Amino acid sequence: MFIIRWVLGRIILFLNFVFAPKKLKRPQEEQQKIDSATSSMTIYEYKACPFCVKVRRSLRRQGLNIVTLDAKQEPHKTTLLNEGGKLQVPCMKIEENGQSTWMYESSEIISFLDKKFA
Image (cartoon, rainbow, N blue to C red):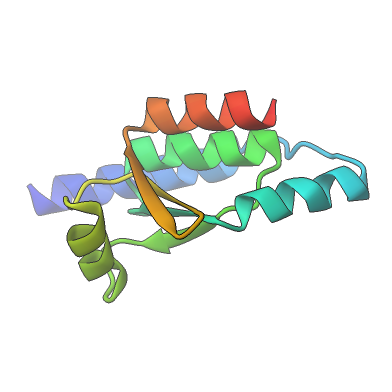
């Protein structure tokens, strides 16, 4: 099973590389405002997870610069489990006013970002 998942993961990464969407170009001032708004957001992911690829493609399409962290590596794995409550990816952490909100599910993350930055 490991070999099958590994091969499928590499195929997903290759196809994502070949068919990567174009990054949205904005005026510099507008991009700086959006970068400031996204600086409080972090996405925990696995590189070859198809749902994580879906979120990354959406980020690129929208021209959003959100930090992505590999949830397989420490200390990110521990942070996701202890603070987020479960080891599920993709997961977006939003920090506002000292409070952290954890958002799971790729469709929910994409919908949130579409509404906030469209």
